[in-house]
Length: 87
View 1 (cartoon, one colour):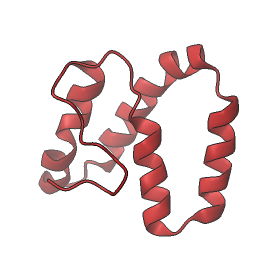
View 2 (view 1 turned 180 degrees about the horizontal axis):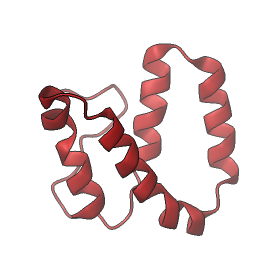
View 3 (view 1 turned 90 degrees about the horizontal axis):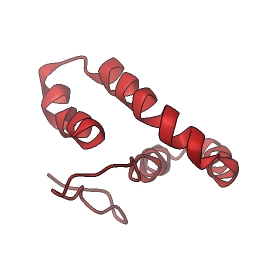
């Protein structure tokens, strides 16, 4: 599996906080050339409350992944993310 430049592959060690989600979204926006969306995302990240992030992001990311899982290939490619957030 390859990863975008600047993004480290997820560690095999269990993670307790979704610290990788923002990097993944930034890489996605950069890859698509969505510079205005990227700027807005970066501004939102500057003011995001850490408690809110810890309580809301894991469920939101899980819902996003479920919505993206439209075929078997995507399911295999993204299954590790659910494990990442829920051990």
